Length: 219
Image (tube, rainbow, N blue to C red):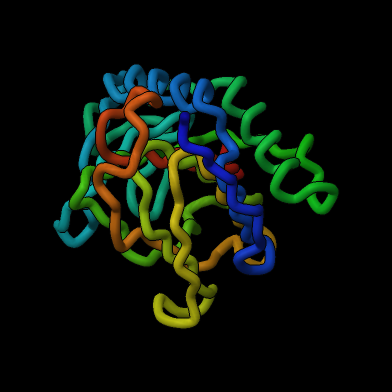
């Protein structure tokens, strides 16, 4: 007899920050994994981002719509190969609007949500993400975050400091996390990934994919 999995309830971690466990179906996860593999090959391929002081991020990143590097977005990836990143697909925007509607209900007009960029981060078993704010966008529209593969410890903090108070959340494959409103500029990070916790049926044998959709407010 197969293992019975009871999904965890949706919860508001902080005002405007909502965790929806198991939001993506297995088919949707497989579709996203395949799409991410295609995007990772270019036109601007996946890479470890070099930080302004010379450090290198342990996660690997590929972008859609706009190319992100610390503190700015550009149309051309001057720090990689000078090419324009892949377009942000319309179907991904539809997924973002559905995510917002399910997370916020009637509190936010989901039909007005028009994400124009996505950052896709791949974490191996040792990769981490330090506490940071997503504030390179000109818009304060919510960020929609999707997780596939190995589970991680996601630390969601406050808007003033990288330290406490914060809440630790375990994000598993298929989970949705949305943060906007009072929590849009909260510090957050990933101190740990739990290798071997993902389901190979997603098409991802190991590691964690995190896809975040944002509205840049740029033209």
